[in-house]
Length: 150
Image (tube, rainbow, N blue to C red; front, top):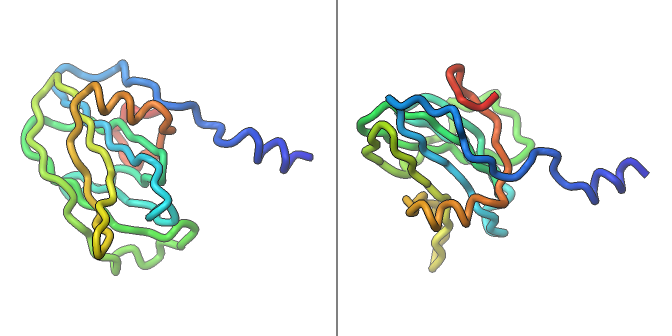
């Protein structure tokens, strides 16, 4: 009975909630993954300027606070449920390079482009599109010590 209730209830983490405690000397970058069947069995360990930030699954978001300037986002693909004992052996893939300004908000969205091969990429979205796409995403865990995520 408990299993049925859990299965019907879905995630216990609430959907997207805008960050409210952003320092004025920082930029806010929402990193998020929309749902896509292709690639949904893989988590993305996200790094900003070589520092681990979060682990994004399908339908996840993370509010990243950035110092003004140039930020390079990279990722490591990790199979869901895989142990991270040998994390250092997984190569990083460069996703995006973004110049951010203090006091501004950015939306960096995960997309899969298809063709002969599937390519992972993130793309900057404007606020209107970003807010509409991130609405059904749930908060991802933080790897940061100075995160606004509690």
